[in-house]
Structures are given as structure tokens and as C-alpha cells.
Length: 187
Image 1: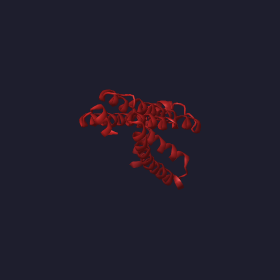
Image 2 (image 1 turned 135 degrees about the vertical axis):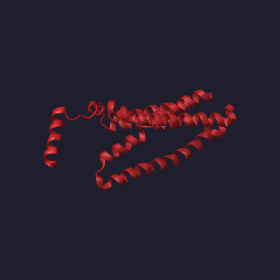
Image 3 (image 1 turned 90 degrees about the horizontal axis):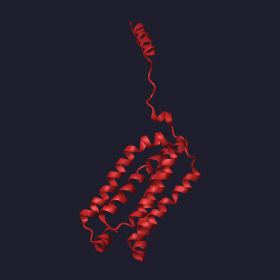
Image 4 (image 1 turned 60 degrees about the horizontal axis):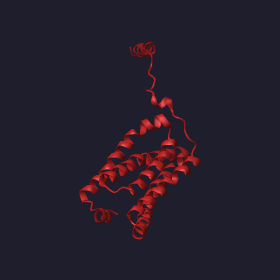
């Protein structure tokens, strides 16, 4: 698709590099904010939203006609996609028993590679037949299609207010009593 963008939109390699960098920076920010997001919203809602909004942002990229609008759409896609893998690994880890958990997580990781292969094959066919914009429309729709499936398959988790608060610490009287007991047994 990059060579097509270079030719059709007269976009430089440097501009394409900035578009990719926008995705990677936003992906990083999305992962760094994930813990706080999960603490406020639970795990399932952010996962469903990750697929819906990443798909919508990817499709929006297909509407863009300038490097800045492409960078914005691609950054949004990266930001929302950032939570999908970590949340899926957590959910898989919770669903599968310890005896098969590593295999299940390995299957998930392998499915990403197989999905990448399928995406490249489909993208090449779509690009050849319908143009570069359609590649992003089809990809965005495929990503977003998982959102309702996940919403139905996974119970929506309520926000976990306990996770948003710092862990309780011993009160001063309890701490002093514990310290006094340790001194008494040490001497």
C-alpha cells in the first residue's frame, strides 16, 4: 500500500514514516494507560471498545487524503489496538486451567501471525481489485466485526473501584504492635 500512496498521493517516504511513527507512539501511550483504564472500566468493556474503535479508525484512514489526517487516523487505530493483545492474554489466562494455559496463550499468539498472513493476502487482492482505500475499509470492518462478538461472548465487567485505590496499609497502632512483637521475639 505504501508504494501506492507514494504514487497516487505523491506522499514522500518521510511522510509515510511519520504516519507509522504516529501509530507506534499512540500504541505505546495506549499500553501505558491500559492499567488505569482497566481499573476504571474492568477488562471486557475496554477489549470490546478496542476492537470497535480500532476498526473504525482503520476504516477512517481509508478516507484520509493528507499525511496529517492519515497520521491522526493511524494514531487513533494504534491507541485503541494497544489494549487488545494484553487483555486477550489476561482473559485467556483466566479462562483456561493451568494445565493448558500456556498452550492457549500460544495459540492466541500464533493466530495473530496467521491473521497477519491472511490480512496480507486479502489486502493484496483488495488493493489490486478495488484500490488502496478499500484495503482500510475492509480491514477496519474485519477488526470491528469482533466487537459485537466479544460483547456477546464475554460478560461485561463492572468497574473495579478497589483496583483504582492504593492498597490498604497497616494502621499506626497495628504497625507499632507488629514492630514491638518482632523486637520482643528477636531479643
